[in-house]
Every structure is written in C-alpha cells, then in structure tokens.
Image 1 (cartoon, helix red, strand yellow):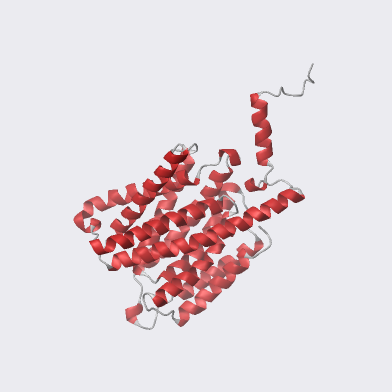
Image 2 (cartoon, one colour):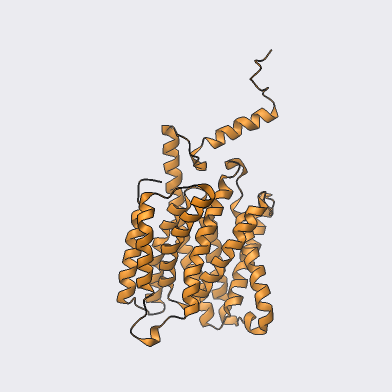
Length: 337
C-alpha cells in the first residue's frame, strides 16, 4: 500500500520529476532561491551567453560589410535582403532535416510573433547598413537594443533589469543623440529614412530577443525551441514580407549585378552566424544583459569604416560613442546577472 498523497512512479510521475528538476536549474532563471552549486552554474551560463553574444557582433559586422559592398556594386537593398534570408532559411532547413528536428517547432504562435517582430529588425538593419556608416548603425543598435530588450522582458517575463542597466539606458539615449547630431557639412547629412531604420531596427530586435528568451524558458530546457527553428521563422517571414512589397516595384527591386553577388552571399553568411550565435546566447543569459555585449561591434565597424571606406569618425561620433560604450560596458560588467 502506498500513502494516499504519493503518486505511483509511472510515466507521468517521471515527467513530473524531470520537470521539477528542470525548473530548478538556473537556465530557466525562475524567481526561486538557488543553492550555491546552482548559482555557480548560473554564472557559467551567463558568461557563456555573453561570449556568444560577443561573437555574434563579429558576424553582424561581416553581414553589414557585405550589405554595404553589395549595395555599392549596384545591388538593390530588397535583393540583398532576399538573398540573405533565402540562404539562411535553406541552411536552417538543412540543419533541421539533418538532425531530425521538426521545422515548425512546438510553440508556433510564439515563434510567429517573434518572426514578425524580428522581421523589422533585419530589414531596418540592412537598409541602414547600406546608407549609413557601419559604426553609427552599431552604436544605435547597442544603445537602443538593450532598452527594448529590458522593457519587453519586463512586460513578458517579469525579468527586472539590473540597476546598472537602468542607469545605462538614459546615458545610451543621450549618446545616440550625439552620434546622430547633424554635421556642419551639408554633404555629411544622413538620409532621414536611414536614421529611422537605424533607430527602429534595434527596437524590433530588442523586443524579439525577449521573445527568444520566452521560447528558451517555456516548458523547461527539455522543451525549449531549437535555435534553427527560431531562425527559420525569422528569415522565412522576412523573406515573404520583402517579396510581397518588392513585387509592385518591378525589376528595380530585384537588381543584383554579378559583381554584387559575392558580397550578398557574404552578408548572408554573416547574418546566419549572427542569428545563430545570438539565439544561443539568449538561451543562456538575460536579454538585457546579453544585448549590452554588442558594444564590441563598434570596435569592428569603426575599423571597417576607416580601413575599407576611409571614413573617420567625427567629434560628435566620438563623444556619443564613448558615452554609449562606457554605459553599456558598465551594465555588461555588473555583477548582478
């Protein structure tokens, strides 16, 4: 005879035990007290997530460089986005098929939401990369993305940002205002639509990153969505949106000379690596904390602007950039996860 309050150790009870074990691990970051070993594991996962996000900044710079060079060779922005998303979707499908992963995932409503929100991020990022200096695009991304990642994580998952992140937010906004300040030379004025894209893109990406966190937490680690499935939704939805809006524009939207093809492919490879690394990073650490690690991209993009395109930063760029870098570095290095 078993005690009346004890469940038989059948299949359902085994699932319950496993769910209880998963829910106690630090990867889910539930609001429960953690034992000392769990705290150590949580710190290790946090550091791995930050390292993955730093690596994604390199891939993102490669993607922006490919987009800008393809555009300079005469490739239409729409076609650059189409090539990037088509190749990334095919790669994600191939990996899913190879590993026996269902490409539609389990949490399809949440995956669709993430794809629709992130779609604006990819389109805005690539358009801004073709029209603005890459360093300015990066500064807008690292300054605004953590803000919207923190706000979305707070609204969707009740993940409260650290005090360091809260302090960094207004300083980042001020820094971006300085970076986008108009130059005294009229020839250096930035296209208004490109500025809107540079500011809007990190808003979408930051919000989408919080949804990625939800996908990694929902149901425990054993039921988390695969990174390839998350990316497949994002790139396929973006591809569909761009194809629909490009159709009325005719041949001009599909212009891609042969000299632009290699750079469009480079953009695709960088974009795939960026999305893969960023998705895996967001499964390891909080959205707001991980996003702050993107400040390293300013180093790479400034070097690319100077060495490849011969554009040195202005005094406004330097002042605003330093403010953004110091603020995000302070938030990223904060001891509170």
